[in-house]
Image (tube, rainbow, N blue to C red):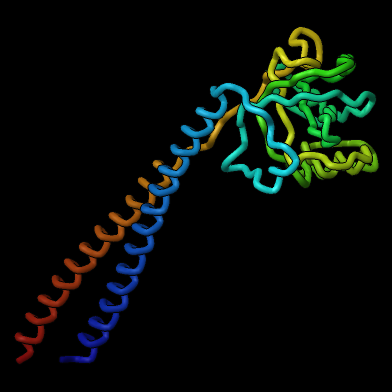
Length: 252
């Protein structure tokens, strides 16, 4: 076998190895996206079940360590207690009603623990209704704390400027103790969220980005392209091999 033939075989072997690795990698990524899609669909089904289920009592203090995004977010709950006055926090918001603020108010339960209630949205410049006096029962959806700040903006507690509902930071800024690691998005008819005047409750957006099927198709498509490219390279290699064989035969 001539030196050029050996070099060509080595090059083809290297290309074949690269093709196998690329094909395997693309298929693995496609399979992963299929698994992610199944997980996302299951999550959406579970969340829909939580949202439309009858309200249950919000997790008590002894259950806080077990609260998690997978098991509790968007759960329909009720909280009984008394609002603490003059401790509202405005958090920048953009909703279907425009830009403005979420109004977070602390609700103290009878065991002394506190749950932050997102009473709803107010537009910039609009007045905020005072929290109702006396004992109330607030219904709504559990949401998990949003630490750190918003997109490209950090919370500035010292300036009382908030871009995310960071419960721990807000509690520290308001000198509140025993605060739940979640907050409750109040329903439109919940006390303190009158619906007509601010704050307007019931604006929770439940949306899950689910493009895993498209991603899976893309990865599987790339795997098929690798197979197609490998077939073309093999055909071209055979053609060149036959041509070289004829040339060697003529030289003999």
